[in-house]
Length: 344
Image (cartoon, rainbow, N blue to C red):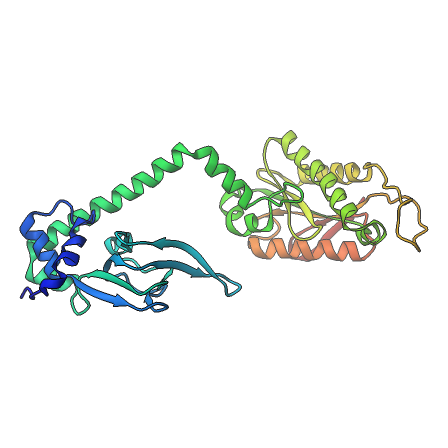
């Protein structure tokens, strides 16, 4: 049975029918929607919905101010949007029957229209008003499809901008190499076996940084990055990456062991040929000669050496560290079952 509405709230209740979800309904059907709505108030600081809640209602803000935010990994609240009077809140999630992925909170004492009312569900509407429910489902489907189409169109029209954002999100700012986040988020989807993983760690890097400061270390990393990026340009494939602090390397699709070995040797020679760094401006107490570059290198082939990508990556990295700690200036080949070949 359709419930009665309070006369003083009629204006607020009918405003919700102006939402895109209800725009194509007939006048009588819009009155039904208004009858199934409810005016609610939300005091400042109170929560409208939490992340993870099922989107069972559509809200129209009539008075006040609502903010939407997410909780970051470090515990901070990151604001996504603010809604002012006249805005619909959660219509897309409501239409999809999804869960909210953020939290909504009142920044001021607020008044909202909620559809359906708190003690009603869309199942109730389907049972009591099947014709109205059917029209709403069609509208919901059309709105979702329209939003998706609009988003795709916006992305296509701004593809250069989208690509630039994508690049910056996964780019190490110091070197221009792909970063560790790219490794975690994207790289597994792009692998095309056999894949060569070549990891590099500069030898005696602490000596350079302790003597001349972090700026000297940053400049050295830029020089190594140029060598790596030059390698991918020549190959016309692959990714030059910065794995951790001063560990860098290459990932090359469709690369066999012989090619990876030659590439590792080439990288080792190119790093060794970098101009020595003068130590004339070194901190007091350092009386060494000019700093000369060399590197520890570990490489392997996925999935030939290890079918589990995560295990293959971590084992190759451990091998790199072991090589570096043992004196460095050496290339180590990772092989299945823990067998390694070392050569220079």
